[in-house]
Image (cartoon, rainbow, N blue to C red; front, side):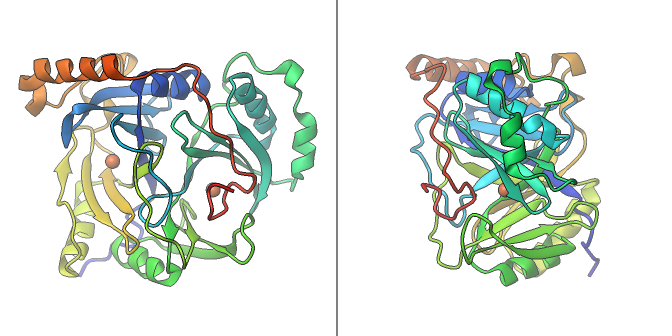
Length: 354
Ligand SMILES: [Fe+2]
Ligand SMILES: [Fe+2]
């Protein structure tokens, strides 16, 4: 059996659920400073939109994507419904600027909090998704030092080049059994690094961090032996995709899953990449996606995300699809700016309401 060790280098994209594409677009582009790189439909449910936001180039590991499902109820965090996601920024110095900027936009924000070798702030998006913005803290600065730097009188007028979200730092699902998750991710996903640490927001609880040799900890599970099953709905992470370079790397992982009798989707052509889906032992939906061919395969780089693109096999249904999307827009109850939910005082607590 060929080894899958080291094939996965990091995150590819993270996909979530939103109630409204226009509120979603304004938040991720105007407030978080990302670029919409694809406006398309959900290939498994083509009468609903699928929206992609990333850095200017659509770099692997920067894309956050949303299924627009206004009729879905609000979900809740638990096993199978991940807790939060985290973006990195260049330096801790921009965290106070982010806080001032977000507050000027009415966004609820908390922090900075000291993490293992990092400082982080937390916010919620219009659907209630918990988002962390984190930076390395090489000088070991105390959160109080950064709090002193925050000056609401001089809030930034835009997301400056220095403030830009660089790429995902990690995604945080829940595991009821870190040892079992470790075995699974090592054997079937080829993740080489595993570290357990205390969860600073939950006394006695742990974080289980998995990753590659070069990029440790891009999956930071919250260890929750007593956790109940969650529900994926509006405001939740739907699935987490990790990246491989080549189709053959993906096939090696598929063979591993097949040989062990673990259910998976088989390789699906998503047009901008190829996908393979399966669930971890706690029912979190994971995807292995190829880096190629990329978001510019069907649009010029300067036009990414500006008009509705459909994979070739759906072009014949364009009229019906556009009519269904217009109907969604008419029946939606759009409010801008949205009423942002508060951030819990201990953001990475297992009880997200805290
Ligand atoms: Fe985190
Ligand atoms: Fe995906």
